[in-house]
Amino acid sequence: MRGTSVKILMANDHGAVELKLLLMRHLESKGHDVRNLGVDSSDSVDYPDMAALAAGEFGKGGWDFGILLCGTGIGISIAANKLPGIRCALVHDAFTAEMAKRHNDANFMALGGRVDYAIPPEAIVDAFMAARFEGGRHQARVDKITALERRET
Ligand code: RB5
Image (cartoon, rainbow, N blue to C red; front, side):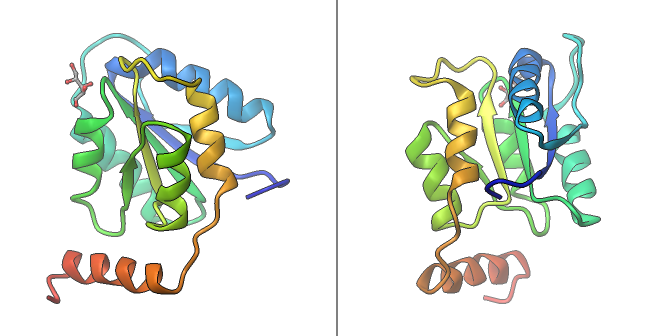
């Protein structure tokens, strides 16, 4: 993802409108192609609906990864991980964001609009985007996640 435009899906509930706008501005300022599937007002919506919307779009292909946001990031990540093909990491800092890609090959990351992060959330997203999946033994583990999803084990 370094040096080229990255295609990023974003979805959020009412608990993370400001965070979504902050991250969109950050990513677009770097030339990335961001699609906003989330809400832009404080009117209440249900985070599972936003997760399903993003997962459905991601499943059509052509997206590099997605960012899901709710008040805590918890609900929307739980919901997203029920959906086929989604590995959504609820990340807290640069380390967990980096490892979500290096070890888990996460295709979504989740953050919370009501969370007070120790570093700017843009830096958390940057850490995820700078990391690369390591494959090898981690691929075997990701394959086991996929098998669980397919009820093969
Ligand atoms: C909505 O009030 C809130 O519950 C939601 O944004 C999220 O934090 C749930 O996990």
